[in-house]
Image (cartoon, rainbow, N blue to C red):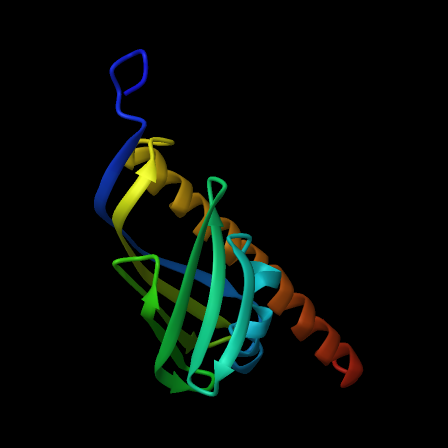
Length: 167
């Protein structure tokens, strides 16, 4: 126990869930290409490293508040340009799932919906309240989506300019 009688470590038994969407001025195929495990660290600041271990699994190292989380994810859904989903097979989360759904809009752009669940069920240092952890994860997801939007839109503009089309 610390001097203020708060435990230094605590068991964290909660789930962080969110459902976020963003409009991206790029075709679904361009956005989908950025969702590949090898490119995820470029847009998601929480991901330190991601490597494909088999065609249907990926090992990721993530960082949150200075703590590393390791997980191996199995592919649960794959429809190029439309849907991609992963579920943790083994790792530091009690449960971790990510689901990306891409919808083409009338103007040829993409609405990306990202649903995520992280269940924490392990002992962590007392470094944040549950609400602080949820807010930080939500902020990190927002940052990741804006980074992804920027990269996909830049890729789409470059493709249009190479094809002789105007922006």
